Amino acid sequence: MSDQAKKPFSFPTAYTILFGLIAFVALLTWIVPPGQYDRVMNEDLGKEVPVAGTYHEVEANPQRLRNILLAPINGMYDQSSGTARAIDVALFVLVIGGFLAVVTKTGAIDAGIGRVMGALKGKEVWMIPILMAAFAAGGTSYGMAEESLAFYALIIPVMIAAGYDSLTAVAIIMLGAGIGTLGSTVNPFATVIASNAAQIPFTDGISLRVAILVLGWLACVGYVMRYAMRVKKDPSTSVVADMRADNEAHFLKGKSTTVVEFTTTRAVILTLFGVTFGIMIWGVSAGGWWMAEMSALFLGMAIIVGWIGRMSEKELTGTFVDGAKDLLGVALIIGVARGIVVVMDDGKITDTILNSASGAVASLSAVAFINVTFWVEVLLSFFVPSSSGLAVLSMPIIAPLGEVAQVDRHLIVTAYQSANGLVNLINPTFAVVMGGLAIGRVGYDRWLKFIWPLLLILIVMLTILLSVSAA
Image (tube, rainbow, N blue to C red):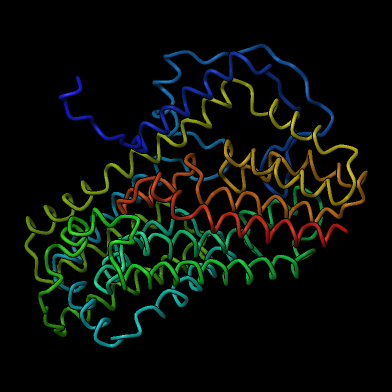
């Protein structure tokens, strides 16, 4: 054995991590007592919400091997969290892959990257705060999450061509949208739903949330810029340094040194490319769109781009299918991640965990109450990553408890959305995290290695702001 080369430790893939979590949650259904709250329909939310003080034990439904294997499949169709079904998100991702492949085939993206690099020569680092501000605006206004998956294939090549790495691009998108959601101001899927469930106007406490948004954005921008500049100066310091050549070949399609002519046709295609994303943002924020409409938009634009790029029918369809195939792994991860919630709900332990957590915050002082509430919501967020799902589940139970500790309900709402936003920067049960990392080809262990100091900074910031406000 001593003569044999020892295999180095390899961190498990996202699929293994998620299946392990499904098995762990299934094991908990054999240990944790099953229980449920009574629920009533909230007409304003259009959802059933739990009623405080009605928790009771129910018949156990421990999850077996069959349930574990069915969980990723059932996860594709589950909508109990109040968000889009995973299968809708997965289809959206596949269509995006096809659309991006068609646009890339025309040479428009390569030509556009060359034009951007020429215009920002020596000033590429300033793309980081500008882009992160745009994503933060999406997060704080309408809770940008699944929609952000559409931007990875656009921004990653630009960052790599500018001398950074794929992780820089992933951080720009994930931290940008994530800090916007953490510091939600008018986000209907977090602030508005949680305030409604807590029976207060959503504008209550908005000044504190603006402060969290601004300070959090500054911390994230400074952190990413510092990392990006270090990588550009010394590529060996990149968290994904060993994948540099492979990533350049993958994301730049081997054309990083090739000058692609910026023709009128390619200019038109790039204009349509930008218009497509603009229409998507308008549709989600003002037009009532969701996954089906967004998928149809990208499908239609792929056909238009193929026609403008003078692609034959076979070339267009073949390119589209190949692009969708490239993101098939991402689509599968989304279903597996949602399977964890399915097992927990079917095993009747979701409400039990909530009941135990709410008991932990009872009869505490104001400062202690708000901090314990924050960490309770952190725990719950790992099991219920959906901001709207967690709001509907926890606010009707925890918000009334604040009256005993003399903590305003708007502060409890802020603690909830801050905790949920923080966890969803790293949450392996959140499809947006695992999907974004898969597109960027960044291992989950490498993401944790990159982000943990920033998480500590954000935790300290949130603890101070919540404590001062409660006091």
